[in-house]
Image (tube, rainbow, N blue to C red):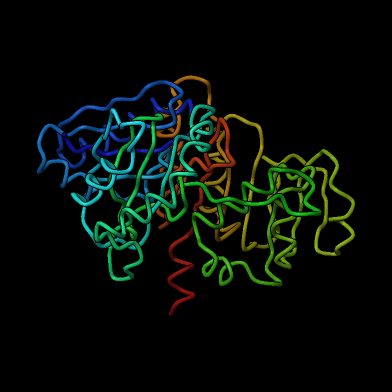
Length: 360
């Protein structure tokens, strides 16, 4: 059984994941091929040589991947699982991966077929954990660098592999589960909440978004992203010709200006600019780069709405436009398709000079 790399993704974006992993393999000088069935919710990379698979697994930085939700290394497909004993072959494959892990994730694709598998998998969980323990597989070893994964792709087939704790998503299925907060005016608020979790984490968010800071929300109506900032006691100027949620304006933290988002510039620099507008991605990319280059803000989170075709190519084009638009400004750009995104990706752009200044 050959080892593979399994990459979870949003259903319908298998082609983009295949393009991304192929590009990463080329960068790492690894030869192989990708199998990706449309709407399956995952892709599989098979290296031609075992040593090459190891080089790719260690050479990819998960946080730099755009369309990948999770990255499973050294994965073996265990197929034709006996209906009367699915657990035995899975435990045997798990022991081949090691006996000391920092955790266990039992996943399935984020698709309708994958959801149907959950009714089969949940009853197996306690039996599987007991069988692993009996086989000497420890799942709560804090010093282990790896997490054990069992990824079911059908009732009688699963991949068994590992993810590096320091180079993977911490969430089961690579999905942070967020509840719609009471009082938020739109579900788009979850996109910014997830972006802060993914790009900054709770600790950095608490340091870099503090009470009294200032922000501009371009294309703010009805205020889903503004709400996230106001909850952190940030003073927000909401720019949109559309209406804002009245409760937000009553907080005293939010001002609403009916103005074109592409022409507005603050008189004084602000700490943050956020933007979730339905517009050509190249225009948003240029806009974000200009705000950073001109010193209008220190950090920005913005969404890029992707076309139906050539989505990978569009993201690369936007990355190039941002790099060109920044000029000589030292900055860091990260792009991710979040769980709460749809036909879009979310980007975080920060000025490195300002961060270095704050640490000195």
